[in-house]
Length: 130
Image 1 (cartoon, rainbow, N blue to C red):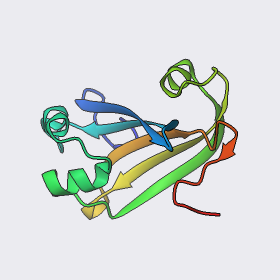
Image 2 (image 1 turned 60 degrees about the vertical axis):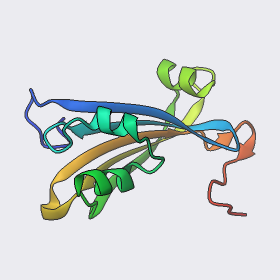
Image 3 (image 1 turned 90 degrees about the vertical axis):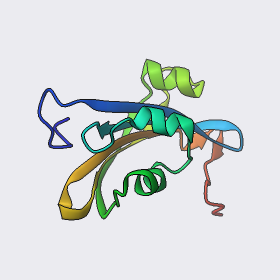
Image 4 (image 1 turned 45 degrees about the vertical axis):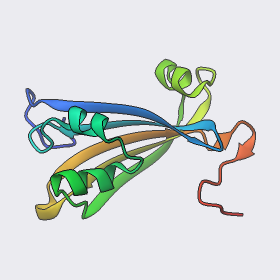
């Protein structure tokens, strides 16, 4: 809530999902949205789930991402991450903590992604890289 510059009692949506590459769970996403900007997000998203959340919120809510701030660090998989990704707790992951800013430089989304960059022994190349 602090990263989104919201009041302590602000209502937010917490959105969780696992993304796979080559049918192997590789990315655990935890995304927080303010309810004040995205009313009924859960109902609208569940009626029309999309792989690209930023495109979805731009189309459905007219909110455009102008910039983002990111921090990357190595972490050990938590119990939740390990369960969701079928890993052992403590498996090394790359954590990407981001805050997305819209028009007027207002923060509107806080995704935290945990990436298994060595998905089952093979280097992860989600974009077809060599």
